[in-house]
Every structure is written in C-alpha cells, then in structure tokens.
Image (cartoon, rainbow, N blue to C red; front, side, top):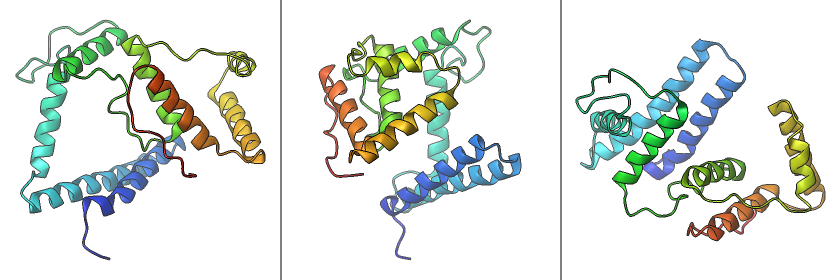
Length: 209
C-alpha cells in the first residue's frame, strides 16, 4: 500500500459509514455497532493524524471545534459557557428554526439553500435533502404533473416505507429494462430543480453511474 492521503482514505470512510448504517438497519447486536463505530472513528483519527503531520490541525482540534459548534448552533440547549439552559423549546420545529437562524447568522452571504449538500450523495438521498432544505427556506417544491401524478397518488395510499421501497424498486427495474439509468435520471432531475430555484450547484455528471 502506498502512502496514505486524505484522498486515498475517502473510499474507506464511506465504506465504514455504510457499514454502520447496515448494522443499525439490520438490527445487529450492540457489540457489532460498537465495533463499526470504532472503525468510523479510526478514519477520523487517520485524517486528523495526516493533518497533524503537515501542521494543519490535530484530533484535539477536531474535538474542540465540534464542541464549540454544538454549543454555538444550539443556543436553545447550551449557554455560551457550555452549561445547559434552564428550559428548552417545546417542539422540534422550534429547534429547527433556531438551528437554521444560527447557521444563517454564521454565513450571512449564503443565498443558495442547496449549498453544502454533497454532490456525491446518491441521487435519492440528494433529492430528499434538497426538498427538505427547500421547505425550510420557503422554496417551492417542483409541481406534480402528468405522468407523475398517478405515481404520487399511489404513494399517498401507502402505509409503510416497505410499500414505498417496493414501488421504487419496481421503477428502477422498469427503467433498467427500458435502457435508462435511474440514478443518473434522478440526479439530473434534482439538478434541474435546484437550478430552477435560483441555486447554482455543479452540473450533474453525464457519465453513467
């Protein structure tokens, strides 16, 4: 193996993160989750060590920065000195509003609600994240028109995420049988939506997934 770099470690960081998700979603024992979280932490340690070797920052800097960020972005939970507030917001909506207000204050020049959404996210996750960001920023969701309407009406009848999963898989299978790349198609649709709302994210990768 060659010298470790931040770039060479990226694939392992992603792999370990997905393994944590799989452990949780499949209901594996806590002992397995413990080990998988340790593997993710190891990746953080390795990146911090590489940065320390070039004099950029240390693992302690990462931890301190995270602590300061949590205190700064959660004034509804913490006082500036890190101690807990005497009372907390009553609803999740109030918490989200306070969080967003702090983030806007940190970056007053940010106008694109989609800034910061990783371009490397799978298209489905990026679509959901984009719609969530848009709703919180008061940006209109894309209109539902034919031939999408019947599918949306069908989704509204579902009782579980399992039902939705079966429909999504059927759509992907149909796309595959028709010679389409479902991931690339959705990635393009998300990009078009973001462009239409005034954002300026990077153009989607036209190459097959």
